[in-house]
Image (cartoon, rainbow, N blue to C red; front, side):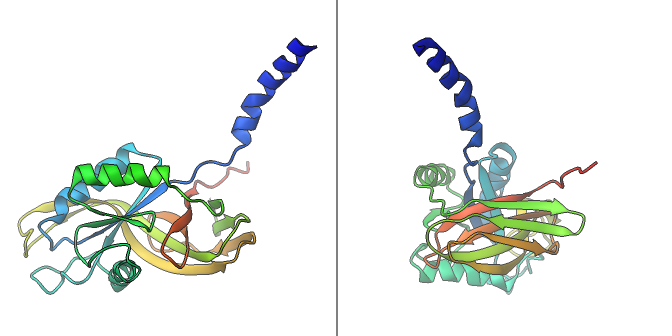
Length: 235
């Protein structure tokens, strides 16, 4: 009898393992600018990690405050600058600077310091918080965003980003260089408030090649994240 019970448990264990919800990615937000000479190494680091680390969701936010210093970054937008200022106001980051990496909305690292970036990502993975599972599914008509039940509250953010761009920079601190940048955020909007109850939303496609949804608490901490999956083949 005991051997039969152990065999049954052995058969059941893989099924239980697969039933566990997938762990959400650690979210890294790089605040950068094409007008900043310190930023290309940080952009290269993020591009490398984006290629090799599927456990991470890496986003580059191009800020506007370098635009008056010789080169207007074509991917900069004011909401990126305001998002960074919000992290400073919350005490997550000590100052508004580039390149600044904010990880999971609660840890700060200088984006051009490769060792510091790796250390901060490891720390975030160990201290990862998840209040609810976030899933994003593509369809012909748009996106389906599903957020599970959980404890606490927060805001759901829809973020669209492009995988990679190469930009010849004509002026400014990086004048004459061609920059390669990955996961460039092109748009960001608030989807809804989340109060611990399940949420199901139908959303139009935003401007950008890829789509992610973040669940963020008022203190800045990211407690849920999902990236849009390919459309289900119904045939």
